[in-house]
Length: 82
Image (tube, rainbow, N blue to C red; front, side, top):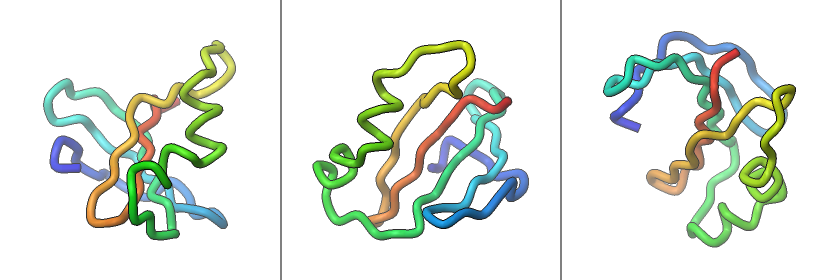
């Protein structure tokens, strides 16, 4: 997560919080969703239905999942920012 600078919170939902952030290497604006639940293994993260679906989807009307990050048992989804 040290590649990103969080700018502000965009929303708060049942499963996670979403922040607007910027990639410090590319200067690209992204949305980062931090899941509220702890994840204790990479396999546990990758088995989530949301991850499986978003990794396969490519459509102009669906926000693109750019990266999945797991740090200190916390899971972050990095999306394109619309």
